[in-house]
Image (tube, rainbow, N blue to C red; front, side, top):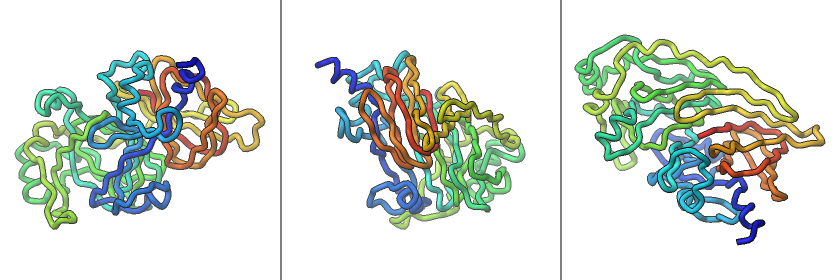
Length: 334
């Protein structure tokens, strides 16, 4: 393989998402983010994923049509120094359209999932609110301390809502949801979620809804009671956010934990002669999710247009890139 071809492998990789048609979804991922699928409703688009429940593929470039997992298996240097197993990414990035309330649920931590779910990962996650109706809210933990028996009884009787802390939300809010936190996204919200690569959800309460086949979705009350934090959650606080400016670009840290770092990045080079510089991290991969606007990303003489809703996997070995346009991204470091 020529050096030129080898270099092209290190370009940011545009991804095709996997889709989910959960009953609480709507149309906004199609209407506002141009997601193309016959699924209706469309609840989630898994924008960067190697999880077997929803794998992404490359669009264009030398990896066109390949699964991201296959690309990473063949190119382990794309991870940088980050520990990995084969081509498995430890994180998953998705867009969520909550036309209606999601179920009240909880996720296990890594230790519980490893022991009880055949070695799977637990699920800690972070939400960035892209948009929300004026009346939108979410459930964030409990407003009073309860016992496992109270949790189970309220789940069975349908009286759980009396214990739940409901928090109003607005566009641009950030919420960190650690494993064990009882939670639910409320109707009317568009959310970008960054999480551990896991599809483990223990459902506690689902408003007695039925799916498209006329069945109630299963609950997982016993497992949920084992992993749920039953203490008072306290009111979630928005992180201190400071924009740092450079030519054509501004960045702010939204959140950081042991699994990922997430920044919001604003690009505006419409009146600049020089483009904004985007420097990949030589030690680990990154994920770029465009949450608004459009433009182009250039690297090694190649240029790719991006639009609202597009997502790129950026290998650790990617050279300096340039961004042009007016857009907002989530810049995620794995």
